[in-house]
Length: 440
Image (cartoon, rainbow, N blue to C red; front, side):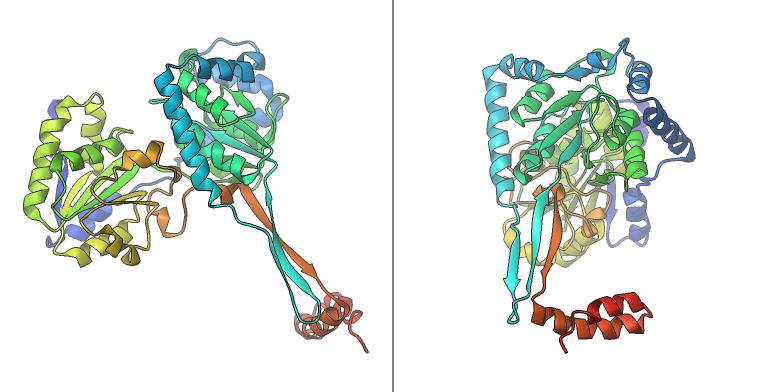
């Protein structure tokens, strides 16, 4: 462990009884997802370059940022045969695990599919809603500090279930290193096009299209600050899923779960990167001490020890509250991406939880199971946005059109109401258009 890590606590300790609790918690939760002026300017320049110079800009930017030496987009394009090769080349155990995860994700998302509907009023007027899929979706798969084949499955499979006709995937390959698991997942998930592009240039290519990269209707998937800034910039030209922040977990424990299990659950998110957040809440002070001891003893055994240590020291916390009621209030205040209810009776808490991306119930339901193979989507709202956002799902790849089919009698009845309201707004053409349909 570094000298710096020894100076700071391994993980912050808070108590709701402390006078400065609210201020300390707010400081830990604070995350500014908006990029700096410098980052925004660089992203704007990259987007402009891709819009005006297309493939040539993509080649130039990929060479610069991913340390490549390619001469054309053909070298940044992977066809179906290469994806199949990656899948066939995996060890049997990995192929079987990918296939099992993919099937569970597919089955879960099949349950999300909404249907079109209509109803007929007494006068024969028909009202309803038609659900249709997007034509083309773009998925961004991170490729920096770690590779995420699971993200391929979680983004592409719901799109397929929704009925999206064409799925375009972009994934950065720094130094030209391809991840076979990621490519195999793309094959298994039925991705149509794969381009080894990353950063703001990949987002711009998906949003506006180039000679080689087809323009998409919506971009989904997490990335770094440049990706997030670019997604924000192109929103309106295309849809986006969300602006994703660092990974988060909030574990609520009643003291009955093995402290080693809980320490590792916290590590499972802290190892993503130094900005990730891992918090445990309990009303059992001795239990909090036991978890702290487990963190200290297990941390040196972790391959990503330095990242975990930085994350826990900067943004992690063990919080001791007074009772269950305070714990429930903290859940809704934090609105975590991942919520583990490591409790004897997790079901009794559901009615009190209003804000959480995904809820993992009981001592045996580790968040890591949801990351890979439980079935529900692991693309979740972060940074408190679970207050108003939902997990990625089939509904993100579909849109709804209203259906209005007035009978003659219905048009006459509605016309009288519309006429009054339109004239009240001084929109005479609206009123007269409706009045033409009114029966004498």
